[in-house]
Figure 1 (spheres, rainbow, N blue to C red):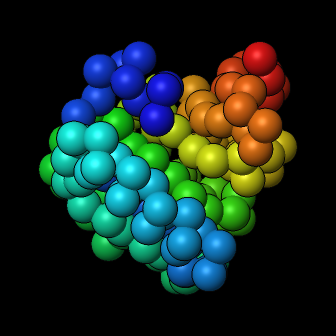
Figure 2 (cartoon, rainbow, N blue to C red; figure 1 turned 30 degrees about the vertical axis):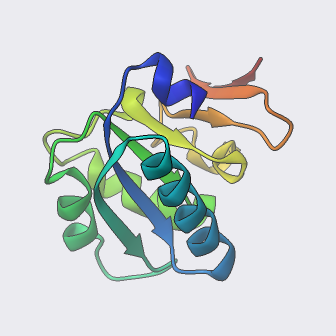
Length: 133
């Protein structure tokens, strides 16, 4: 939430995998964000495997939010991110994830995505690396 506040985000779209952990994390974020006065544009979920993530990608960018928050494993989000790269409006620099997305599986598709670790540090995918502060 500190990362989003630093960006002055108010309208956020939340995306998550359909597994139990990702769903619970997304639900907890939505509750905390709205309790803090933020607005949720949409909540979009996706499967780990699918023929195409076009529908989910279009829903993810549709409302032109200030930021995107992702609760997912790297496999599912990696597939969605490949599709998002072709969608006008998505900006990985305004996309924030939880600790699971700080993964080498995303280096080629999620340049600019950042987030928080489980211990409160921040991470960012940048130039083929994951930097942690």
